[in-house]
Amino acid sequence: MAASGEKAVDELEHQHQRLQANVEKLKESINYWQTWEADYEGLKEELQKLSEDASASSLRKTSEECAGELLNQEEISLLLSPEKGGPRTRQQVIGLLSRRIEYVQSNVTTLQNSLQVAENKFATSQVLGPALH
Image (cartoon, rainbow, N blue to C red; front, side, top):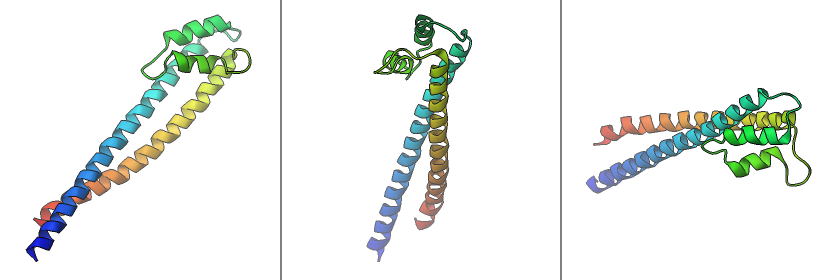
């Protein structure tokens, strides 16, 4: 009987560690997506300061000055001009950034909800753990 009790405690501790790892992973994911949001928002704000008829070179210069932690030169190039077709206008880039920001915010909300559930499970495992010892 004691062996089965030890096994149950070991399983609970293993589950507790998995839950803790899941909480940390979700926090990292939220941070990642929030970084994207900040990068996109910063670029969008700077582009909105430009005139409506800003040139492609002006858009590129401003965008490159706004490169962030995740928003690198390759990503900026994709934002400013698609693989096919000419360069995007200021308004097109701002619209694209707005859609990406919405997508990122949706991801953050989903992850925050998942984090809340994971933290509740983790808290429950902390309460149950000592009760079995």
